[in-house]
Image (cartoon, rainbow over all chains, first blue to last red; front, side, top):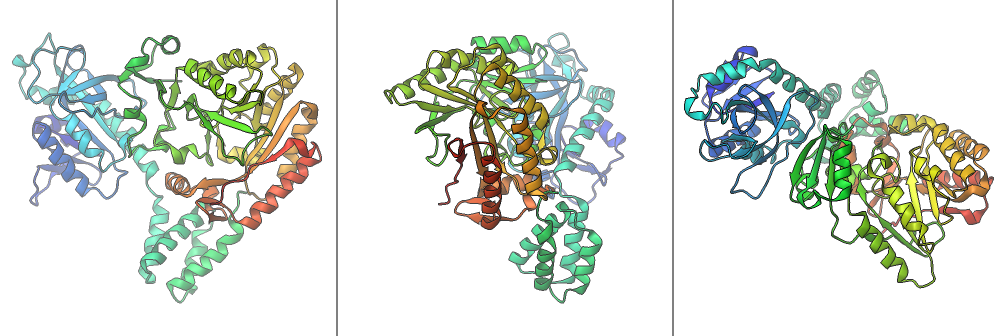
Length: 268
Length: 333
């Protein structure tokens, strides 16, 4: 899972939970990562969020990875400590309104969220107020499947406990208290993300074949399609390997595989 | 069933909207200015959305009734379709909606009254000649009837307009509204079929073939004219045996005099739709079939297609007269 988080104080519970280590090599933003997770500390505000999200997308291998914008926010109605998923994200000066798709099955509150350029102290509506989400969505949607881009916030201030009395270190406590809910969001999004990725055995097989024979760009596409079809039609990997071993070159392999698949190309 | 309802601010007070809000009091309601803000953006994933579609309530202000291509129809000369709803309750792997729309959310146009006004205007243009209106193009006509109540409104309208013919096309067994209503000779309920073994693997959520035949029986007993649609015809092993068994089962239980029309159509998809669907479901055996590009469409190879359509035609003509059989010819340009 990938996270864009504005302050390190908000990220601390995740860094601990997922045992992330700080990246040593130079990077435009602080990055904490493990084999499975990555947290980028963007800094506060729309510009920072957009830049960090762009940086993250550049690091991702395909559009089917998931990203969460996590952090604290103000809210006009919810009590402090309430976690919620944003379902309508807008910025007063931007025509585009984002609607993060409702794909998660979790008993967690939903709310509209207004991204502001300075902290909102008056909470005029019963919605959330932050400083990054709109820019995060605007950038993330350019490279990532929309369903896999979600905004999760934990309420840090509201009309009863306004921002004036808030200390940034409280962010760690608030996020920490919701770490299990956040982990559930991560789990469900990871599951959806996995579903969209091509099956590992297909990717492995394509890789194996390409390491044995040379393929032109067109042949490469043909190969990928044939291996995909072979997998979909239940053609045994062992048989494919034996074809690979007996084919003198890429062209011959493509032709033999196509012939082998021919009688299987109908629903059983 | 519905957890999220997006609604255009302009339809907030529409009776249909209020009814749906009442029906789903727990659903999260999210206002929007125009449904396209939610339905149209690129980068949405139809496959993920299909797991839990939201409902979008909107008003369609554009053209509401469209002409049907000349090669389609069930005997009428003036054919039109309209779509009060986009997307379907069921998840059929061959369905072109997956390739056509960026979103799998149910988009319901609540201004039924405008659809009926335009249907009325359209059929009145033709003086005495009857006009056909097909409702199951972008959605199943009956599957979400409990939610939309559209068929109920349509039956009231068409009862007053006998020169306007209606086809309700469905794979559902939600036929209660028809069972409760007086049959109308100019309203055809057409049921789509593939053999049960095929339906099991590529028509997720669709009632069984026997349940659909039972629904047809009930409607036939009430006096409703019925249609049978074998469209698309799907290439499969034991093709003749499976389609023969399907057709036999239908005609064994549904009296042929209740059958208004039968149509048979080959599998065909515009190439960009096919490519999008293949990307959505790379492991789907259906898309690894024996296809070729013909004109702008992807279809089964011509020899397979001709053979399979002929087989269906032969099997059907053992049960109905040729006047009732219609073939859908895709445009191959």
